[in-house]
Length: 128
Length: 176
Image 1 (cartoon, rainbow over the protein chains, first blue to last red):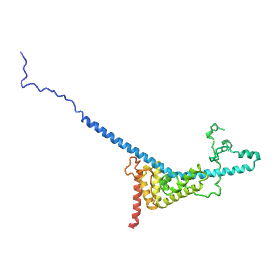
Image 2: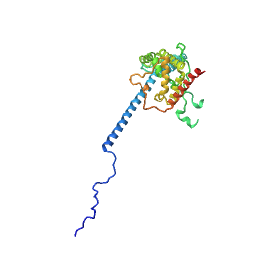
Image 3: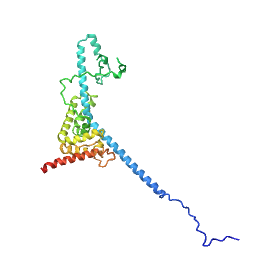
Image 4: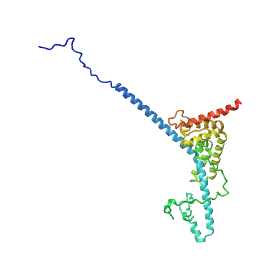
């Protein structure tokens, strides 16, 4: 006794797997992402170069202004320097001989520098 | 005496020296421009005053700082800068104002004010024959047509408005 195939035969066997599509070929993803990253890096370094040039422009603007600003500041320093010299001469007039000798003694051995007069403190707030 | 007096930083330091320069040093006007106009005009000052600027800086270099020795060169530098600013104000005042007001708004970033800078440099080249040039490089960043960092579009808008107003002003007498 043996079973026989049904009338009309068996249904075809599904031998192929029925998986959903996984998108493009892997190589397309690989080259696509590589291309995108290459473009990103290209733009990034373009931006870096541009930032550098912008900084250079800024620096040269400053360099061109520097003599002008320094000249103005120098006039202020010279004004205070000469004023302090005049004040010291005025003070010196009313000094005894030994005080004057002590006063004229050089504080610094280094003569290569110009020593500007220092700021002096004003009166204490409570005395104003 | 209050508690705050204990802190030394509360003490107000005062520079009381108000004496003028001695009379044998000639007087000179100060430039008196604020930062934005100075930045705007910097390259034109640099182009016009290069000999004076170099002379001054070399003098300072030779004299170990030279704050006292280089007063004469310093006066020349200042006079030259004043000349340039006066010329710019005379011939290109509106363009100059457009540009430095943009700089003022844009945190002094030159890259954000290219449109108005183009208008200003054109006017200055036509009238004063001065050109902005950044030394040491081939690619002049301010001539870049398509920069990455452009800032806002405010400057473009204002410059377009400015040009339109000027065109209208130029056309108005013709129709009358």
